[in-house]
Length: 195
Image (cartoon, rainbow, N blue to C red):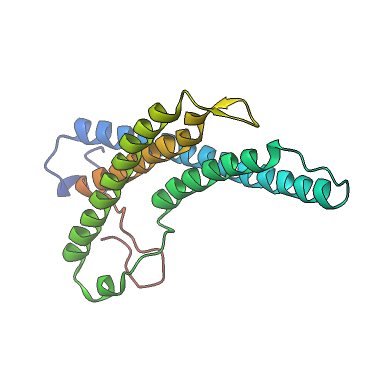
């Protein structure tokens, strides 16, 4: 931020370091937004493909009297991908269900503390997804999905990837809040612009 820009006198950091930090933050935020968009597209494509596969299974079973063996297991595999990737996108977009009635009655500083606690819990949950997803994938990697001829551990890869994205998106919000950025601006019309 240059010395003549509005708000330059409010900070104690040198202008060059603040500009570099802001540029780094914007670049990181842009990269994570693209990653979130990619996860959303993959999730949507998985949901669409699963719908087509289930339609083919029903059509084959009731019209052709010959249900393919690969349809059920591939639909379940795709369901894991779109659920866990979609859940990670929901973490970033703050679209998960929450009980935030108390937040409407608290001052902004208390809201930031409660939201930080929530983000830390979500971060720990994402870390648990990674750790236990890797363990499950290792335990089942030598088994084979009979109808797909894939290692059994493949079905746990979306848990690991979804957990990694949940961690990244939670860390993004925690870092932004710590840096004083408006990451907690309420989504709904509550009159709060910058907390």
